[in-house]
Image (cartoon, rainbow, N blue to C red; front, side, top):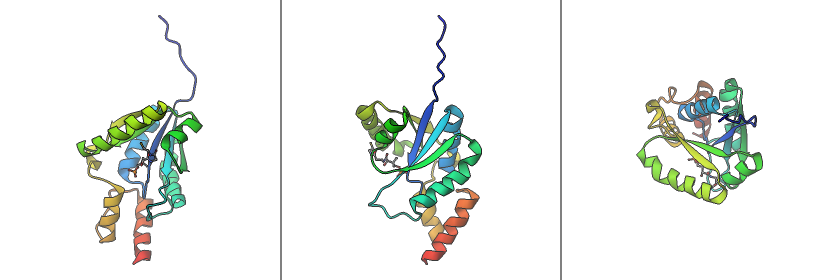
Length: 168
Ligand code: PNS
């Protein structure tokens, strides 16, 4: 039987706080950008969390480091991720799984999201190089003067060091 080829744009979203984007995030975004026509990066606004960077600063850094992929759109969103997906016709959420410890919460969210709206979640195993990496740890290590230059893109590193120096 002949397979009917579809011509619709295939979209996925990589959601997160991205405060700031790390090499671990970027690895997942790059891999998603090879699998989908358009990858949306949704910077979720959490008003109860004071970030190190403003949402606008996070978006600007993500745009700069992902520009080379050519199919990445970066936006902020306040509210449910499934509403962001519905408004843009996005059927899939792509998430990196670092370790088993991520799994319980990620599974819970994935099951909630598919139950709410039918949006699927696809888990991508992170590169072992970044299995320990999180934005929170990067900020903590950098705040105490540790070297995190190999864990974030160079322009993010410069802005991280500058922001920490301003806050001292
Ligand atoms: O980078 P983070 O903070 O681990 O990302 C978590 C995030 C933002 C992806 C998650 O909290 C989320 O999807 N928030 C949006 C609000 C929402 O849809 N909540 C219900 C999740 S089932």
